[in-house]
Length: 166
Image 1 (cartoon, rainbow, N blue to C red):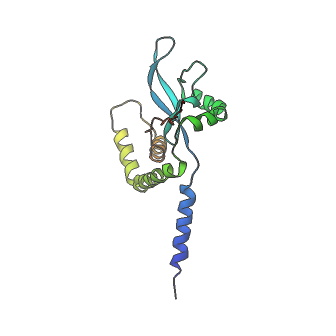
Image 2: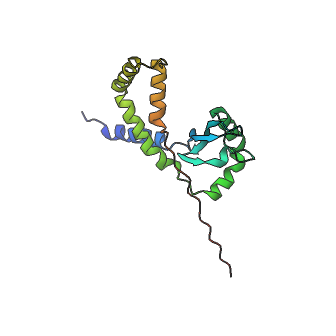
């Protein structure tokens, strides 16, 4: 009997391409501490598109960043479609496909080692002297969210405009 390995491998390739041709990813990230209007040091949050920080998604009318993740998501939902044409004009953004491929394989690698890594991380955290400990489900949730969407982001590259004056 002959095995049909060609169609099986082709279906795996099609399935991988289906998952790799993902859409653009948006994520709230902490961009660092800042000083609020009341002179209080507080974390500020921004929105990334394919791991590129886009300030226009979350800035208010005074140019202030939000101080909570919920506020950043709310501003993003309200301003996304208004500022999208401006962002495409202003920034040189990477396409979604090349951004998703390395992230997919990195996440796949983390998923393969998770049966070993998660119990070790849980045991290490449960035996630590800190009073606030996370549950195993919270550890697993944080592990998978950080493995499939890294916390690293880039600054956007501004398109250069050349005006010729005669």
